[in-house]
Image 1 (tube, rainbow, N blue to C red):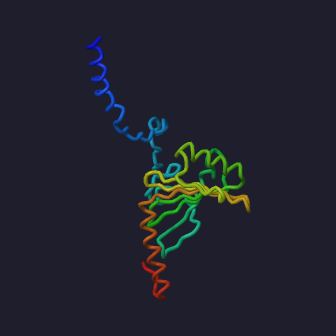
Image 2 (cartoon, rainbow, N blue to C red; image 1 turned 120 degrees about the vertical axis):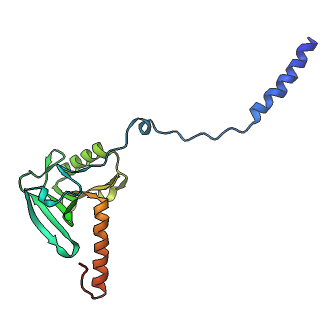
Image 3 (cartoon, rainbow, N blue to C red; image 1 turned 90 degrees about the vertical axis):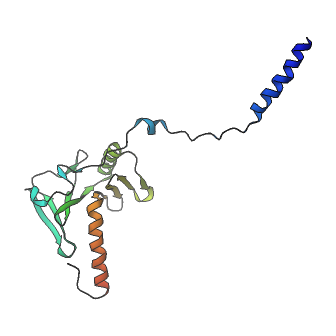
Length: 190
């Protein structure tokens, strides 16, 4: 019995520090979805038009507007129905900067179409990276493409847009130069 009592203090001396050592702070848990779902893939274009394509690559474009000072032309497609997210939409416009496709604009009517478009975008690109609920605004940044979808309850219309950022940013430089020249009373840049 005398030997057993010596063993207890030794165990006590060895085990007490284990309980007194500071615990590591818990590591943030990754969500199960983040571990299992791949990141959404950025769209390589819109419909059958790759980003950067020249307008001549599409035979069914009809010019809607042009801003030569900004090197931008906007077209509609004649041979393709205006449909997105499985629903008819008011119009789809395709914008080219220096004859390179970089932007699509989709106009639609009604809250049901807005909800269908929003559901399609969420399915394709996951939850929005930005939302402004009181303005019915949702946006995604997916790779080099920015996407938004908005609904305007005051007039029952909405729109969605896709921008290919590498070309859009080049155009924005021209816009800044143009605005600067115009504010200084000079000629627009060419």
